Amino acid sequence: MDKDKVQIFDTTLRDGEQVPGCKLDTKQKLIIAERLDELGVDVIEAGFPISSPGDFKSVQEIAKLVKNATVCGLTRAVKKDIEVAAEAIKFAKIPRIHTGIGTSDSHIKHKFNTTREKIIERAVDAVSYAKSFVEDVEFYAEDAGRTDNEFLAQICEAVIKAGATVLNIPDTTGYCLPEEYGAKMKYLKENVKGINKAILSCHCHNDLGLATANSIAGVVHGARQIECTINGIGERAGNTSLEEVVMILKQHPYLNLDTNINSTLLFDTSRMVSQKMGMPVQPNKAIVGSNAFAHSSGIHQDGVIKQRETYEIIDPADVGVTESSIVLTARSGRAALAYRAKRIGYELTKLQLDAVYENFLEFADRKKEILDDDIHQIMETSDVSIKS
Ligand code: KIV
Ligand code: ZN
Image 1: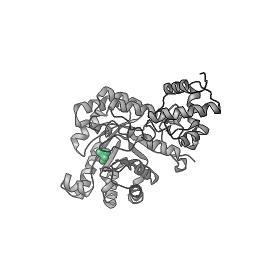
Image 2: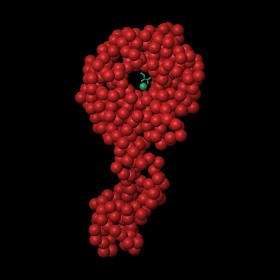
Image 3: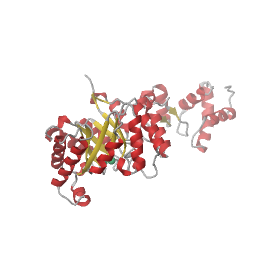
Image 4: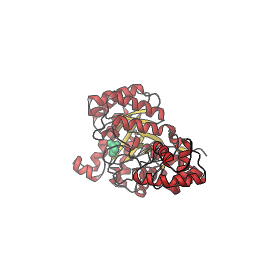
């Protein structure tokens, strides 16, 4: 059976770039946009054109450059925002306007000091106006995570009638639990008239570390677009991490969901974005962290050396990592030492290994990690005759 496609909407250059200190110039954004297109993302959210002349220019240049992906510009539900976004994306092969408004009671009361009825009116007006510029209009219900489902369904129905092609259901504050977010999508699928005319989209923030889990719950319950960023960067604790959702769908074929991403470019893209934004990737980050395929305890190392799958659920080559690494520390066993020594030319007999291992442990207790140069030194100072 053919798998259902989940569209990957990358917002590294918009929500991702909102991280303090991660500002990019147009040239850097163009390099990243070109790579995202190559990676196979379906939509690139290039920026928020009304926010500054620099952002407008970046969105415009990205729109001209991108060959395959839809190029999208963000707006508030404000006429001027929509006009400026339409101008910025007009050269895109496939342009999209992403407009919306806060829908939770907290946003309606404190941000807009208005009523639910007026919010629906503004949402419909914004979508209709955006629709006069482009065919593809995505509507976001900001803080949908804390919006009551009945009202959310009402506003979704109204904007679909006005022509929205995508309905973004953001968990703006990263509040929802996966079950709750999944149930929200299910509720909308079952209660919004005309829902089949639009795609439901997950946009999750990571305040409770649940952005990836919530996005997966969303697609399991009927959403077909995930909004995410490279390395999960974004406001506060960040957004859903692109590499995580892509690999989850790939590693769980029974979900019958697939993306267009060329996963072998994930590691390289992660490093490119990290370097351009000056934002290091935490070593234990899933999929792209430097320790994601590193094994350091003796039991795990022995298993991986015998058969990679004993402790690895992903083939590192699938995400563009050349090979798993066997890190030598005082927790490593003989198998790991023999493996690493062999790679630099030492073929040890069992007796030799026993002798060298004692020496190795003494070294390793003094050093955090034993590198190849240390192995040479250990061999030289061991009481056995070994030639490399
Ligand atoms: O988190 C959010 O609600 C957003 C919207 C502007 C789409 O980023
Ligand atoms: Zn967001």
